[in-house]
Length: 413
Image (cartoon, rainbow, N blue to C red; front, side):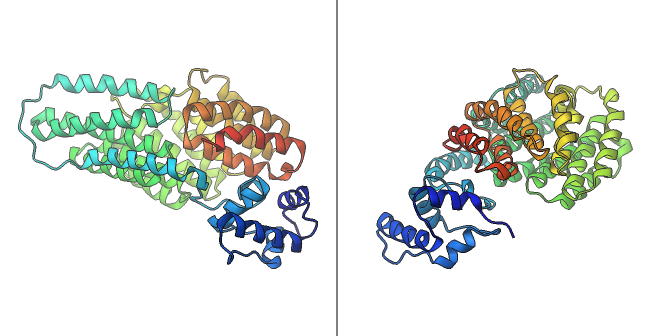
C-alpha cells in the first residue's frame, strides 16, 4: 500500500522506464561522479525507495541522486532525518559553527579579574540596552545579534565578579537575562547544543541570584529547548518544577511556564490540557505589571497566548482550527515584526495545507520564503520544512512543483 510517486516521476522524467534500469543508471552515474567503481545501487534498493517507506540514502548517495535527478532526497519523497544538512551547505555551516563556538567562549572567561568599582547606574544602562536587543530581535535574524549580545554578557560577567551587595545581585539578574537572550538566539539559529549551553548558564546565574522568579524563568528556558527537541514529557517536568511554588511567582513567570507546559501537552497529544493551561494563563495576563527587563514577550507580542494555542493546535494536526487562529493573530501582528510574522505565516501555511487547501498554503509560503531569505532564521526554515511535509499529497501536482520553486532560494541559503 502506498508508494513514493515523487521519485517515480523523477525517474520517468530522465527516461529510466523501469526501476531496474534506474538502479543501474544511478550506479553508473555515481561511479563517474565519485570516481569510485565500487559505488552501486541495487534494484532491490530502488524498489524500496519507491515504496511507502523509502528510508534515507547515505550522504554520498544523496549527492549522486541530486546530481542525476536535479533534486535532493527530501524533495523526492524521502523523509528527512533529524540533523540532515545538505552537503552544499556544510562549508558555510562549519564557518557559522566556528563563529558560534567563539561566542560561547564568552561565557567561560577564567577569573578572577582585576577588581574595580561597579557603579549601580550600569544596571539601568544595560537594562535599557537589553530592551533594544529584544526589539531588534523582532526585525533581524540571530546572526546579527549573537555577537553583540554575548560581548555585553562578557562585560556584565566581569563586572559581577567585582560588584558587591545589591549591585552584585542586580548584575547577576542582568547577566541571567543576557545569557537567556543569547540562548534564544542560538535556538533561532538552529543550534540546539549552543542553546542548551546558554540555557544552562542562565540557570546557573539564576540559582546564584537566589531570585525565585528568575529561577522559574530559567526552567522555562530549558523547557523551550526541550520543546524543539520534541521531548514533551521533559517540557512538562521542567514547567511543573517552575510552578511548584507558583503562588510566590510573578504572574508573567506563571504565564510563561503554563504556556510552555501547553507545548509539552501538545507533544504528548493532550488537547484538553493545552486549552486548560492557555486559558488559565489568560486569566493572569491583566495582572502582569512588573518592570523586570526579561520575559516580557507576553506583554510585547500581540496575541501572545493565541500564538501558543495556534502552534499547539498545528502540532496536534487541527489544521482548520489552527488556520483560523493564525488568521486572527496575523491581523494584529505588525508588518515590521518580520521574523515573527514569517514564522507565524509558515505555521499558518502548514495548517491550511493540513485542512486541504494547498493553493492558499502556497500563496502564504511565497511571502514566507522572502522573509526567510532576509532574516536567515533557521526556525523559519524548519517551519517551511514542516510545510513541505504537509504538502506531500500534492508534490507531483502543479501546485506542489510551484512550492518547490518558491522555496529554492530558501534552500540555497
